[in-house]
Image (cartoon, rainbow over all chains, first blue to last red; front, side, top):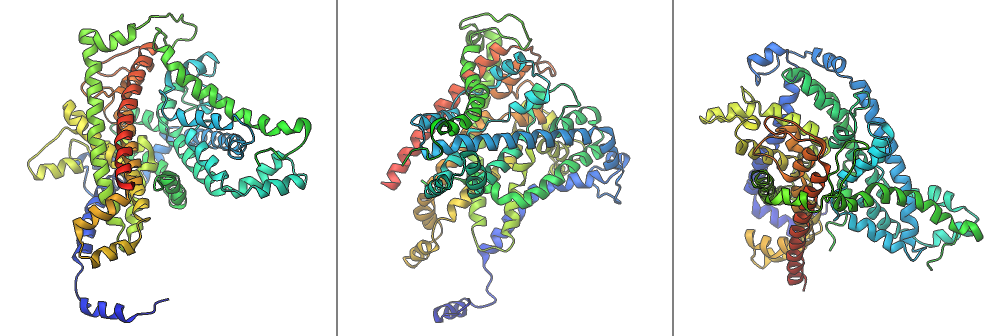
Length: 287
Length: 309
């Protein structure tokens, strides 16, 4: 791997071994300053979560004197976090699952050009990105269907996402058509073909869309504020804000609550990072 | 070959049949309501089930734009939205590019930095908001203490509207610059090293390299970020909900739509479920986004033509 060519050697020699690369040093210094702005709020949160309330009031920024886990116990008990977590998991998994499956079935015939109107359907998804927000009429719709303040009504709101559709259509176009032919000749049904052959082949796109869509649902704060008034139906985001409304000055408990909800997200993020970034940079670097 | 190869006779329609659920959901939940916003903006709809809805013509728009003291707040919110968008777009764009360039070098630990800067994006507004409320604690919080070393003090989010507004801008950029950064980073990675080496041999350095290689070759991600930042910041308002609440002197248009439509009461500002009016306000916001977005698109296209030929 590391064949040192002559020119390379010369280069190193002329540069000298002990020479300091000031551009790198400068870059590191600036990066550390930026990092402080990101680590700072995080550190304050962790530090606060391990303090007792009197300790916090005395000196909010002083280091916690010990690992006091009482706040986590309190936060878990005082708010209905177990309920909220279950709700969030239900909303996120059910809505994401239905969304992804229905989207693949819309995307495939469009990508393959089975129907002449396919391209107009795609156009309808593209223009949605530029249309006015659906907020008000959507509320009227859910209200008049009698689905206000229900799980089903809330999930309905998350069964759509035009960007995901566009990503999946574009990806299916890269799947060779010969596959369709041989599958059809082998007598494979369309339904089975999509689920057992196409779906595994478009896994990268599906993974990206799934992760982005799921994160969007998990983090949604506005829609639960609008649509859910019963706290047995709250997802964690809404639960957190309500918890703040009640225990607003008890920052140690509040910080512990935030951490409880944050840590699983951060762990998942470590694993899913590349899908998230792939989704966000999709199409952004090509012309 | 564009034919459906699966099945004969009736089963030929299976793909169509399976396409329908997804498409109908889309039309009913997203596309239809989106178009209906325009219709609702001419009514006095409320958020109460079964309440009569009457056609009021342009009344909502008249109230939004030309009704003395009432309209003044709305217009102030519109101008504030533009100011917010301008500052956020500019700073986030420049900062995101700068961070991406720093991380595009051969540095140890750059993945860690990237992960850190990107982290807020996945945490969502509720957690972002609470983290910063704690960080910006006016009595003895970390930022307050740092400021006090320089003899300064701030009430932060609870302070004067201008001050609170400025801090929301800071948090907005903190939370979203990671997206701008990864898009620029992806763009930078498509520029081959050989180009820089060749230019260095020709005697180019520093600013010259940036101006003649990096900037033109980064065009696709420059365009994406420019448009995304403008449109995103015009529509952003959720951090205001978490950080300041609906407070006089900090409202932006998106928040105004929500507050009018779904009855947020806070401090001196109160509102009912005025969904017709809220729909009109969201149409105003829509036109703002459309006009500014199209202008930006035009600028971007012209620039691309100039560079790419």
